[in-house]
Length: 398
Image 1 (cartoon, rainbow, N blue to C red):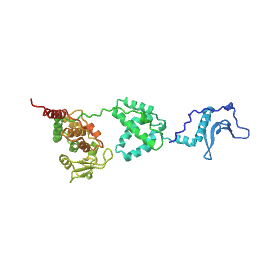
Image 2 (spheres, rainbow, N blue to C red; image 1 turned 90 degrees about the vertical axis):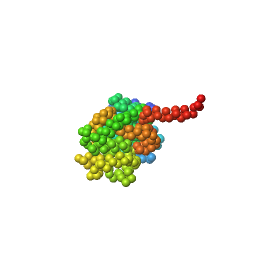
Image 3 (cartoon, rainbow, N blue to C red; image 1 turned 135 degrees about the horizontal axis):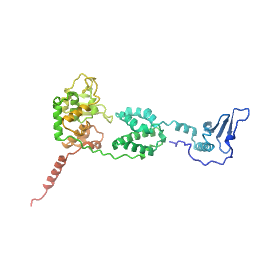
Image 4 (cartoon, rainbow, N blue to C red; image 1 turned 180 degrees about the vertical axis):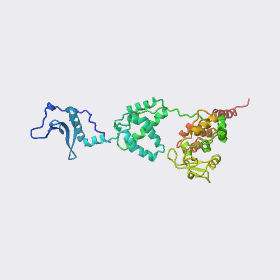
């Protein structure tokens, strides 16, 4: 891509005859007059009874081109000369300087680009596009939304990352905003709106991704007791209880369970067909016998398996009932998504290969799965003892 023209580029000016532009006037009998400068080809001053306006006139590919530069005294003679000399330099390079200016003027602001270009693409390719909207509105738009893409620098973006971080947010939150901006500028680069992405020099923050919260054996027993006897704990929403059990037994994401439709199930083969997961790719979940029992308890009256009977649609929020379940089971500092972490940890601690766990969770990469696979101390201790026994078996009998 050719480098956009900048009227602020300094080019040495030739010596021009000194005169006072304030003294220029319209000759008698004329409404305006156009004055040229022999030492600065292309520069014109259009003088009328009310104003003095700088113009550029030139020839590009055999055709006359012209544009207004600005009015005097808002624009000085030196500024006008500098712009015209830059124009002449562009012409020598085979570039139409007027087209360059129009191109720069038409570069969208960050907000305009997000809503008109990036977001329509994201809706086609990202299931989590709503998260992008939230991040942009809350973290990015208030600071950089009204600035043209080509005017946003790496320093400005680094300052924004610090601004987000200083609001006591986690490194992961900052990095998600960074990733969004990086995607946006990559799209702008691909469309030749900018020469390069300023995000290449904005460093990613270190994230502490090791997940340590999972259910102990005692916590699991207490949770299962509450789920099995939920009425005794004044928990009457059997559907949400079923949702929690489904999350616990399948390792599926909350949104996947809430939006499960009867048409997604192959009940003869005990399969749950997800047409689109978080990464936008289809996958199949093998339904164990306990998950099948939960599904069979649900009403077939609605399109969704775990439908809210008041609306026939998925529940908007199950946190209140989930928290009530946790309180009854005396479990603290545990989130809904931790049920997925727990599923992965239990799979690994019970001998499942990381590759198998990866496919159970529907991850595209085993690296992602590794973050969830927490080995308990007793698992590590047993492995160490097993190795010690193997080594000891080779010890000679003395």
